[in-house]
Length: 352
Image (cartoon, rainbow, N blue to C red):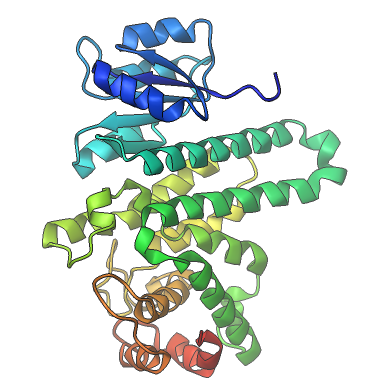
């Protein structure tokens, strides 16, 4: 039936969690509950759910063991799995993601957050299936469907970017503003003839779309760190820094799902290198000077400008003039001096 609710399978050995979860989800979805991995496999024999919400700590078979079985079988390997757990360590989250989970939600549930994450992941899954179906029929559809694949690619980028921004609630329209900043810098580079040899072959439209994913790795960062209102501890900052390498890994996983991944090559560079610094003190690789990809150096300026001029719960927003001064002071240490000159030339266009 076209209007039938999507099925979600909720697996947890705690009856109270099953009851709470079912009550929370039943308004929007059909929900099948299972108190163990064995019961879940029984449900899957006659049902193909849109998503599985899978507890990790269960007797007999853990969630980690269960997802390995799911991913090993062709019939269930593509079902998106979201882990539910009381664990909060980054190592646990990275293990879950490496085993094929699409997300990692801590208990007790935060109702609005749980519903929003499910909604966004189901949207991404539907778009990926649409894109894969398109690829399977590319030969006969190439003439009249080219516009459609571009729209799907753009929607995928936007949805993944919005997922991160929803979790990192303090950033507001950070992705949209940094995207605009990158566009301004690229236009100024072309107008001034700067770095023309490097940017000549870039697909600027795809590049600007792809920079929406520069922070996609934050999906692996715990909520209590991502949404913390005070200064991060040294340990917390070390975990936050992993979002660059994890972001690169996530983009690579998406690339592997489609034969049409040209639009993601820029996203991978943005995600991995936007926190590198000109003097080599950045992360994750401590790259220095021109060893840092030009895209990363461009995003670094757009990213910092927005961070400076945006209000956070732990700081006030700097004025445009203060932000420009700070970026200029970072020339040759944090930022590429040539790009700082480009930024100064276009600074008025950054003013909100």
